[in-house]
Amino acid sequence: MSWVDQLDVKLHQTRIAADQNNGNGLFATEDVAEDTVLVETPLSSLIATPSTGSSVQEIVDLAHTLQDLATNTKWSQYIALLPTEPINPLGWDADKIQQELDGSSIARAVEGIRAAVPQDLALPAQWVMSRALELPTPIPQRAIVPGIDMANHSDSPNARYALSANGESVQLLSTTNIASNTEICISYGDRDMNEYLFNYGFIPKHKRRISVPLDDLHYYPLDLLQDEPAGLRLKFAYYTAKHGTPTVTYDSSGWHSDFLLLLAVGELDGLDIVEDTAAQAADPDPEAEHLQLLLQGRIVDLTDPDFAAFRVRATPIAKAIAEIYLNSANNRSLSVLTGAERDLIQEVFS
Image 1 (cartoon, rainbow, N blue to C red):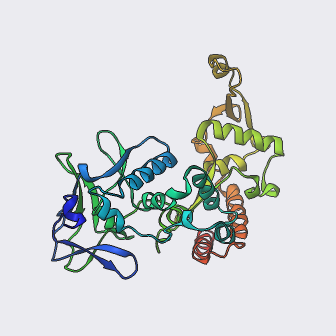
Image 2: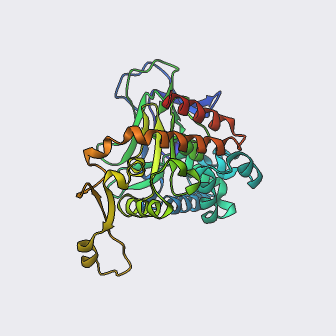
Image 3: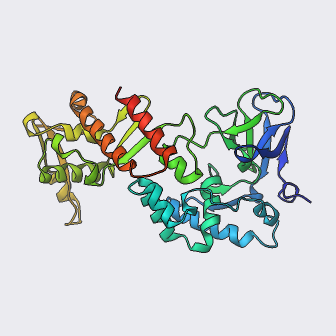
């Protein structure tokens, strides 16, 4: 009995076959109409953990589960077919990570997850990172869905996954008419290039987006900023308290960061950051810091239309940050990432 039968996975007009570039994949066995159920996996066959809000903990929990189910269970045959070679940077050795990712946000992410994942779970953790789906079940969960997890990524997907109407299975449904022998693909989501490489070990041809976290002064073009270090720290404190870690994102439509708008505005423009005494008085934590933003004497936030006027001034800052980021990337030999990043930045500022 095959794992498909053992796990009661139903394939409709679909077969699992080797794909020349991506390992296994799903292929239509005949012409398929739009909105056809192609694969159906019962919830009882999922390998799942409740969504906790902690991605790392979910990865560890699922990796433990995979390890436990690998022997003498109905999942054993399925698990035995999963890849044994490194899938993503979590599987690389320390020398390769330093050589190819040093200075990148991926390197920090890999360090973080390696600290949480025991060495004997490194491969199961990669299976989780590259295969698990977020499911909108009554109790949201992160799950490996045997059968549906054979669907590869495409920038032009022809299928999607969803919970069945009766809530008893996960279904893969066609989103367009599919010709016989065509590969059935889904989208792995709206992620930036770093996230794709970190989780899946590749960068899609047309998935081009870079997010640079601005929690490290290394990326700040200090000569272009309005502030002395004390003023910069105050802006950072205000922003992180309201919005978390600031970032700047680059994609085909340009650059995006309300924090850079804040950096572009200075005291001469009428900007001031002061203590929010009302919020401070209402907070029982005496150590908590509450700040508010004033522009020309008005209490504002970064959604205020007046900040949009400073985008022209902020653009050289965005460009300089991109150049600093790319210069750090030049020290890496991972040309697939660095080259794609450089092409995107050139497009944004051309």
